[in-house]
Image 1 (cartoon, rainbow, N blue to C red):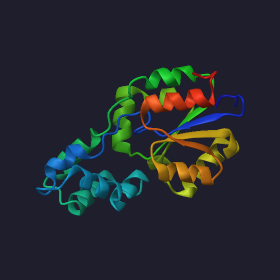
Image 2 (spheres, rainbow, N blue to C red):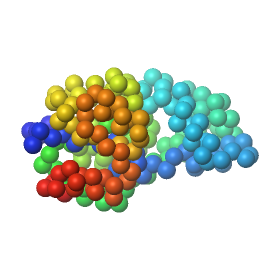
Image 3 (cartoon, rainbow, N blue to C red):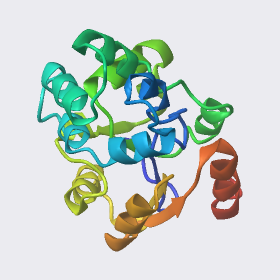
Length: 205
């Protein structure tokens, strides 16, 4: 990891901040008639099966079978996994430009994700080359917003939380980051991220 400059390490969530993550709407076609996209996303994000898969505690076949049962999807395992794999898009506009301008500073990503989606994104977009470290929930066995996940990142980065600036699109994650001592900010998309970075570090971007 690069030498910490100006007592600053920049830590980024991926989906909704740097990566396009539209939610589970593309799976709505398999839900019972009358189910809204809002309802699907609410149940999706509250699913224990998602949490287990994103913390690396079950394999993809078990995950698919559990989700099909839990949400009453009218589809088969293979079709579900292929659609699930394609949910996240690539980098949002200007994301790589922002990261390139931060290349002299220590950066890390901290993402709730899974092997199926991350490996596809890494293959297509080379995500990891833009960061000094990547903390991926399915690899570390911990997920946001659990306190243990944030403390794990602090320990592995080897700097005090007060030196970290964390950017995430979800209030609960931002609040936990603040609770462990990080400087944390809710941002949605690259426009908000760039505005916040300019406010905090005028010389960085």
